[in-house]
Length: 266
Length: 162
Image (tube, rainbow over all chains, first blue to last red):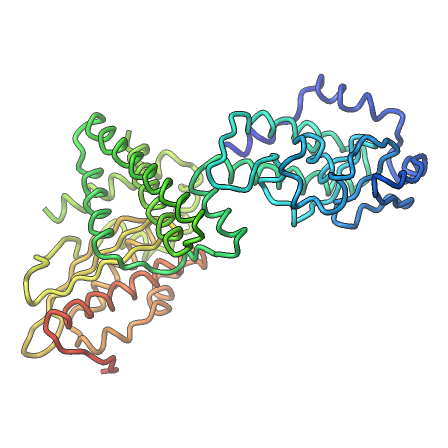
């Protein structure tokens, strides 16, 4: 259901606005030949053929508004950039309004212009997400080349994925571990007797809960536990104690599952 | 009491499935054996953990937050598993796997049940690839139960085909 909502066709007003500035550009490679090669200090590359096949880090632009720090090696510096500009580099070119192919080395935090740490506070994640979709949504490019339509589909899907992963603490935790090269192996059986006994009791309590008040009581306990383990995760991760961090994510998974069951019952 | 527990568990799961059309479609794809174990689970319940004849295996799958408890009651003189109980919080495949496991261990020697492989369980229930970890969980639960019993008894048990 969520997927449907996120993928709704953009309203015609938005489309008109987005497309009006592209009127002068025809689809395809010819338009790109209008851009002069970029000036030196911006260190940008230019491909006459319009093949954006070098990982999307580079940009077609006749304008020189990009500062040098946002050019080639962005990983170390993108945290300081203005989110809109640096994001535009990776995914979308504002000058020729062409969607770039997905660059897998750009991680989800970069897409939303966030620092790569677990406790990111972002009030405007949804706003940024919608702004992205206004540029990347496949509906905007249905009249463009097949390649660009493909890029639009991939970029759009990636942004959706990024949004979903980052907006929930548990998925964010697992993702940030993955970025560090630690795969929280979810297939492995765990046999921590005490913890599992506790979970058994909690799940039994949920099954046997008499009314919604009892369920809500359990739910708030669970939420508190999730919060505690979330803080523990943040700590462990910061100290690079990945063993503890994995343990924390596992705990969080179990408590979240219990919350899910409660919600279903309510 | 047993019926109540299983009924409660089933109610929880049944109402869940009623709410989600996607899962209803999935239900058509569950193998009939899984559905059978789900509707008529065998050996739901618990033994007393502290009973010296009882081995308790408690395992969890972090991917889905499932918890599975499998208990065996062993005849000390013969080393044969005379009874088994299970309690599982998880998906239909997990419940079916553990239910099947309790059926299979009954009447067998402890060394024998250590050779029960998750692939046998999965094959019997025709589990799809995405649910293979449920059968793995059941295999681990059996091993954990045997291990617990032998820890209580203080003597190790080697896997041995009958």
